Image (cartoon, rainbow, N blue to C red; front, side, top):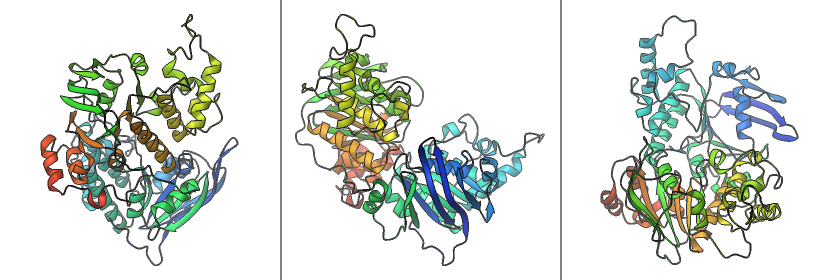
Length: 546
């Protein structure tokens, strides 16, 4: 979708005036004033912790501002009343969908839209209205389909339809393409174009700067709780947006080929796992020293199971995994001792223990090391001086900010939490030791991070590869996969394609494989036939690396 020019005299449908919100001494929003016009797409950008979520929570009535006011369609919006926001025509599609998998599309749309005292559901009328809205906005759905059987793109349609069915005239989209295939993203952009034609106003929140410039007419940037820039999207560059977001120029992770690919560090041979949708079916993969092997795919297609198997958390029911010629033990602590480093998908639930201080999290995976524990006492006797010193080295080397080694890990921003996890995984306990990880399993390492943190994390993975590590990168971000991967494979439904050199793929071929349309040699044929390079969407300088 190409962003249409704004109307000559746009009608203002939303006005935020002087919004300020404090949490103790932290000023999350500082006098923010914004307007949104009918038929306009406004992109809202900012680093993690810049105040975007707080501002949207105030707009939705989840928080009450300490100062300022909001008007929707010329009328004051009562503070702290989510029902009032919905009644005013404000809808939001969250990055993580809020759907009941066991219910039908129609049931999900109807949930919460009918009064409790109504003796029966008017399903026939609701079905007709749902189909009318779906046709109007180009969002085809099957009302009786079970949501659990839908693809990610289809589920997103249902989320959007839920808002439109309830009369949303202002729609907030939070990271709407984070889990979509390229083809599904294109379909979403076409839908946004139809919404603009119909007069909807859209707030588009994304870290993907290329998409932001493509779909929006205007851009607003928050930094440290303040509105620091507003500009027309036309004529603005990704570099300018990144500079506004972080306050300085941002260099992308350097794309350079692997220096010298070594022997196989880890081999996965015909591995199957049990357990529902996120299972593996006959997966083959070889991970070599000095190389980044990137896996693309929509979340929930077996990537989590593969990461768990390689980190010793899950045992395959069939097949074999070899680590440097020996069977890989299903014992996470032993794997850490053998040089396997992990960056888990969920930094909050799995990556850190939120209530423990930063210094304890920094050494949590290496407590068995004699560098941190006394050799004669193993039950909780930790060399705290060394542990705290290590935490300070991690914070200094990986730029972990947030108050020092004694603050709870949950108080860190997403970017700083990820840097802590990265430092724990990559930095050896003994500062004099040359030991570096032999295998790094990085699962969604930059998910939800701002442009500055993304660049930092990606560069650390490239540096680790150049130091001789075998790196497995699992990412939903196709730009990241193509930017960092020396070889790329695609996972769908628990099946993994052959890992081909990155130059052999096109975005179209990857998107086809992500949707389950092809696999193995067929994908290679599609990629080769599309022209042995990546063209405009490949590794050229126009790539959005947010």
